[in-house]
Length: 228
Image: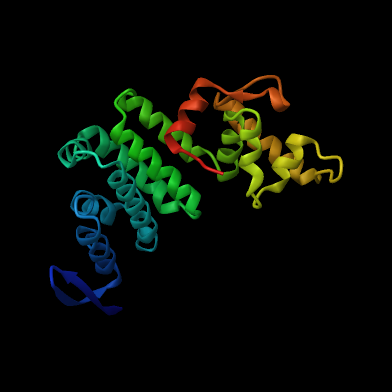
C-alpha cells in the first residue's frame, strides 16, 4: 500500500509516494526539521529496530527531551558532545523500546527526564544510569507514583494523591480510610505494587507511614522527576 507524504525541507514541500515501511523511516527523519540535532543521530537506530506503529511515541519522547534540554539553556556544543558519546548512544538504545511502549504522558515524561538528567549530570557513571533506566522499565506507573509518595515527607505526601484519580485505592489503603474499605482485588494490587518496590530495594522501613525511599529509590525519583 502506498500513500503520498508531504515533507517540508527548508522552504519547500516535497511530495513522496511511499509504502508503510518507508513512511516510518521518512517520518522519523522529519525530526531533522523539528528536532534538528536529535533527528540525524537517532533515525537509523529507530527505523531499523522499532515497529512503525510505535514511532509516534518515540517522537513524542524525543520532542519532550529536546524541550527539556532547550529549557536548561546549556551550551549546544557541550550537549552535542554528550549526546554523541558512546555511553549516551548505549543508553538511548535501551530507552527507545521503553519509549515505543509508553502509553501514558507521565511515562513519556519519566523517560525524557531520565535521559535529560543522564545527559546533564556527570555525578553518576554510565552503569548507574543504565541501572536507573532498567529500573524505570520494570516499574508500572502506579509503582512510580507510590515510590514518589514514599520519597516525600509530611504534607508533601498529600500532594501526590491530591489530583490522582487513576489509582485512588492506593491512597485509601495507605491511610486506612475507615469510610471505604478497599476491595480484596485492590489490596492485592497494592501489595504487589509495594512488593515490587521492596524487591528492587527502592523503599525501606517497617510499613505504613514510616516507610521511605532508600538511597537507590531517592536517586531514581531525582532522575525521573515525577510530579503530582
